[in-house]
Length: 190
Image (cartoon, rainbow, N blue to C red; front, side, top):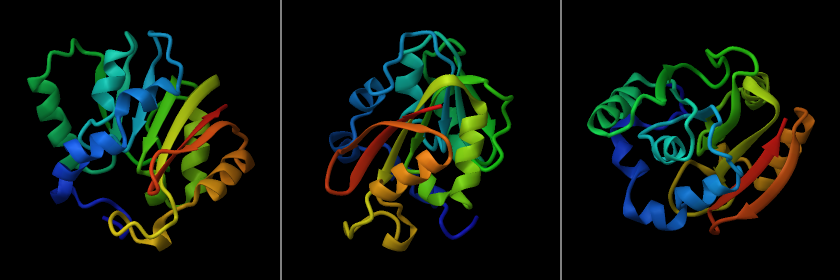
């Protein structure tokens, strides 16, 4: 596990009522303007915070990608206890080398994970590779301010820098907004 990666022993922090108040998945997913049949990649799926709500919004496949087997084991146990009929597929892999075919998905979710990706531009190129032309992605990240919790400030990427890096990687930034003092979202398109 590299120094930026989330500690899987803290998985309970990924899906709790306080986080749901600050970052409610449904209004964030609405920013993607899903039509209901998209294939979606959830990069850094963790406990499935966005995986399960995304699967409710599409008849397509939701690929839950995570690099850590502990996270995927937890997600698999949640999946087995759920009533989902097979539209969630668990995938182990890194954001820097996504094990999916080119132009495989219509949408990508990157929640609190891009600050862990090294190098960031490689991870973004991979997201671009797996997105279909015109596909949209949602980035939710920690703003580069001292919030008293979360990753060290040195690991964070400000919303301004993230928008610039996305555009330098060939994406079109469609929407940037703060959700709290600590979190922002950016919707971008291939």
